[in-house]
Length: 358
Image (cartoon, rainbow, N blue to C red; front, side):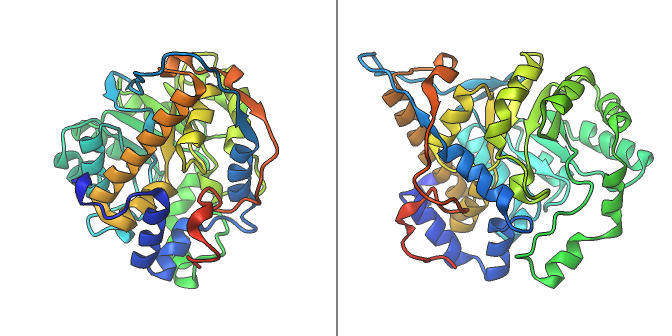
C-alpha cells in the first residue's frame, strides 16, 4: 500500500495533509493549550540536544528491531492513542490499524475515536493496545475491561493526565462544546485505587499508565504494578507551562530503574528526535501529530509511507552516530546545545517556506 502514497518527504506529507484537511481539523491537530508553551517546549527541548557521533566503525548493517512485551517491532516507534481519528481519514482507526499491521508496529486505540473497540479488534490479528479514558463509575470501568479482554487486546493503557480538558483556544466553540461533556467528569475521580482496579480487571495483560511527568509519579506507578510508564503531556494539550517531555525523561528513567518499560511522546516528528529519546533511556517513542498528518495526507498508505521515512531517518542517524543497534545507544551520544530557531509545531520542517500552511 505504501507505494501509492503521493509524497516523498515529510515536508511533502505535511503540505499534502494541509491541502486535504479543513481549518477546524487542522487546528485540532496542530493546536495546544492556552499559550501553547508546553507544545513549544516539547520542540525546544528536543532542539536543545545535539549528537556526539563516533567514527571509523562498521555501520554497513543496522538493526532497528525491538520487542514490545513479546511482540517484535520493526522499529521502536508506536502509534500514540488519538481521539477523533475519523476526522483525518475516512476509515479513521481502521486505517491506523491496517498501517500498523503492514509496517510492523503496535497501535494504541483511544476510547474516543471511531471505529471503536470491537471493530478494530476484528480488523486485524496483530497486537494492539486499548487506551482507557474513564467515562463512568466503577461498574462502567469493569464492563469496559470485560470488553477489552473479550476482544483480546494485547495490552491496556490508562490515561491519567486528563482530569480537566485543557483550554485549547484554537478550537472553535462547537468543537469545545463537544469535548466538555458531563461524562468527562469521571476522569476527575481517578486515584491509585482506580489504577489497581483496572489492573485487576484486565488480568495478566501488560498494563501501561499514560500521562506521567515526574519521577515521583513514575515511582508510584511502578509500585502499583505498571509494566510501562508512558511519559506524556498530551502534546501540550492539557496543562500549559510544563517541561518539554524529553526534559523529564532522565529523572523518570532513573526512578523506574529498569522495573518497567518507558514510552515517551510529545513533539517527536523526525528520526533524530526519536534517536535522542532512545539514547536517553526511552524504550519506545510514540507519534501523535505526525500520525494525524500522515493520515490526512494519504490515509493508511500515507501512514505506512510516513513510517518508512522515519525508518530511513533513524537508520541514517544511527549510522552517522557509529551505532548499529538500539542497545548500543547511551546518553554519551547526547549533549546540550543551543537551538537554532524558535519552536512551533512545524519548526522541525524548515523547508515548508513562509507561512504555507496557516
